Image (cartoon, rainbow, N blue to C red; front, side, top):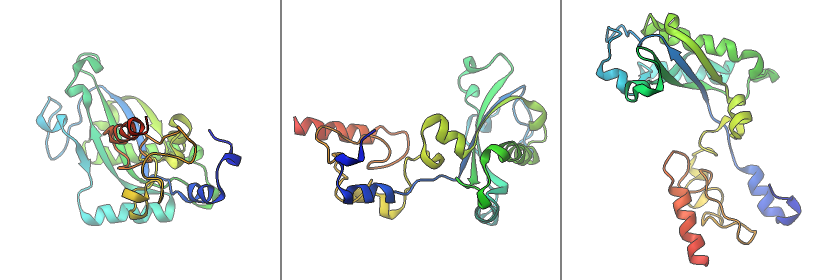
Length: 223
């Protein structure tokens, strides 16, 4: 958005050093029926269908998902969080049908050996469907349609660099007074009247509205 000539070299250096990248793969699916989980049988509406359902049964499972992603680009047994909003708002789907979102980890923003997500997104999607079906055997056959967002798709469609849903890694070096970087955590930038108000500023990612609220308070002070 800004010509680099208007920024000091040190500021440009810090911007280039800001770390982005998320290990997530997103899917939205239309379902002919609710998942019939082995541990909670039945396709009739139950309390767990209206909750966040996380497939990540053990610490070993979670660790292996991360190891797989670092070695191969994505986990052969990913962590999958399932939300079924149509169980709360029935207007989201026709009667008897449902929509669900799948928040999936671990999937590297960049695949090893120069591979592209464009060539492997369908394979990753099958891995996710297979994983859920292992715990809810009717799931694969219940999927009517799906929308797939690899880390690369998230960058292209929503402008999330590296597919980073938090607009910047949430490490200790990029939090609090270091977000986005030291000396610029007060929402102001080197350019007068240009303020930061997104998740890349303090307190970071998440649907809170707090960065925008804090930025608005600083703008009012400056006025």
